[in-house]
Each structure stands twice: as C-alpha cells, then as structure tokens.
Image (cartoon, rainbow, N blue to C red; front, side, top):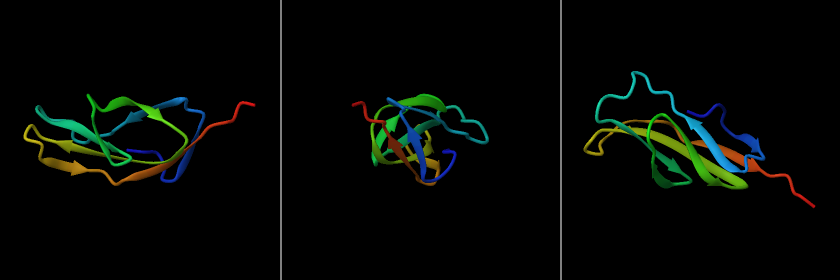
Amino acid sequence: MYKRQEETLWNIEGLLNVSVAVSPELQQGHRIRVYFDGDTRDVSGTSFQLLEVHRGTHSLQAEVVDQTGRVIIRSQTSRFYVQQNSVR
C-alpha cells in the first residue's frame, strides 16, 4: 500500500495521494476502508486523496470489506512523516 515504511514526505500542502493495490481486483460489493491515524475513512476506489495531512507522524492502513462490513483482507499499518518548510 505504501512505498516504504518510515518515509518522510516534504511540503505536501496537506494533501496525500494514496493508491491501494488489490489482487485480485475488488469484487462486486467489496470496498476499501482506510484507517488514517486510527480514524476510519471510507473511500471510493483504490486511488484517492486524503485531506488535512499536516506536519507530524502519521499511520495508514487499508482493508477490503464486503457488503456486510466483514473484513476480507487488511494491510499492515504504514507509518510516515510529513515535514513542512517554514516560511519566514
């Protein structure tokens, strides 16, 4: 799901583009659910954008759930850091 563990991202202006690789492809009725810093976020599709990703340490995990909410598969949690250059 995430390129590398412990990666530092610079100056992303609060927007994080995420792409989740699922094999085999999502089945009818299945969807992606994401945990960003422990909070659940429902997303549409396997590519999406998370807003308000500010400076600091963050975690991201994705899972595929069926129409009843049962977890089919879950990724490992990825941790990453966001740094922002200061404007003086």
